[in-house]
Length: 215
Image 1 (cartoon, rainbow, N blue to C red):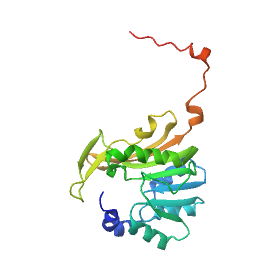
Image 2 (cartoon, rainbow, N blue to C red):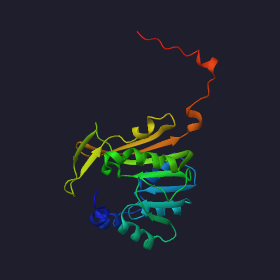
Image 3 (cartoon, rainbow, N blue to C red):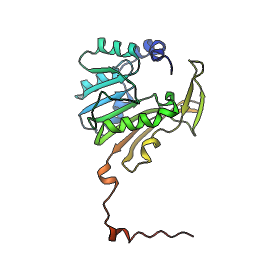
Image 4 (cartoon, helix red, strand yellow):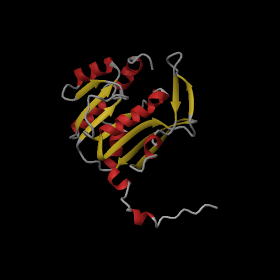
């Protein structure tokens, strides 16, 4: 996406018309009884969800690449911490500082050569035993299509949870799928990060008990 304010300019009025307390992401976190702590929403837009999280007791922060979105959020919700930034470089935040990271419906716009940087940065700032929440379109299979709003740009659709769950350090604990149109779905997916239990320690002699049989 070349114009960082394009989403804000298209969607501001629509987002303002919604009741921010009615939120399937917040419902999912309630269902899982996610403990209160520090939370970062990456792609926070106008900041409504960040504010709702604060009202529920979280120390809430939001980051977005759109200066207009962040200006709006800072004016409307001055108690929260909002920053202009790129998902591929969350350098404002220390390692493992957040108990929850929400990745908010933008991965389909990320250029393929930056996707793993985004994944790595979200992992870096998420604490051990933290929770990662993904909001995304969910196609039946990976596909791409031209950006409907900006010429020369491409949208990339896939199940982005797999960008984390390839690692045994991430386990999917929740998935809610909603049908949008005849062939389109969206999903809220929650992953738990636990590196300590992902790689059990096995000594040299213990390793000998694992035998692979081929053929």
